[in-house]
Image 1 (tube, helix red, strand yellow):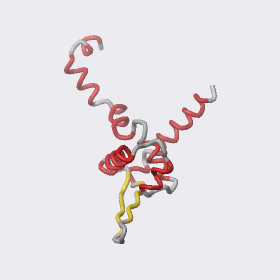
Image 2 (cartoon, rainbow, N blue to C red; image 1 turned 180 degrees about the horizontal axis):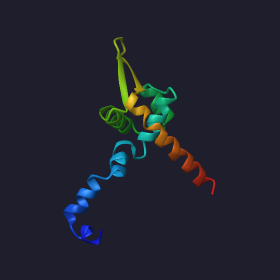
Image 3 (cartoon, rainbow, N blue to C red; image 1 turned 120 degrees about the vertical axis):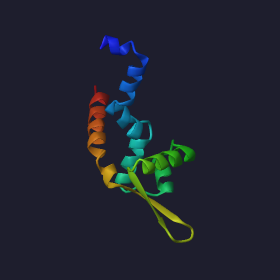
Length: 114
């Protein structure tokens, strides 16, 4: 292992191929887990999400929703009406992340009570 750590290219490769890094790049950060949870419980319109997460900026919410959609965790449905109505839903792929997020919530709750 020490020889691997001396080779910057191998270290970079290990980092890029790490499943934990991959997962955190997809669902990590301050907002994605919170957004996913809010959509899961039925808060699925942009304005409602903004009210449910009052400290997130409009730009950040937009950015995070786009990333979650691009990565296949949520789906966006646009209704043909005026004004346009957009709702977000958890995709089948998005459902798979909740076992991880639920365990993370349990761990966090246990740590907070210490």
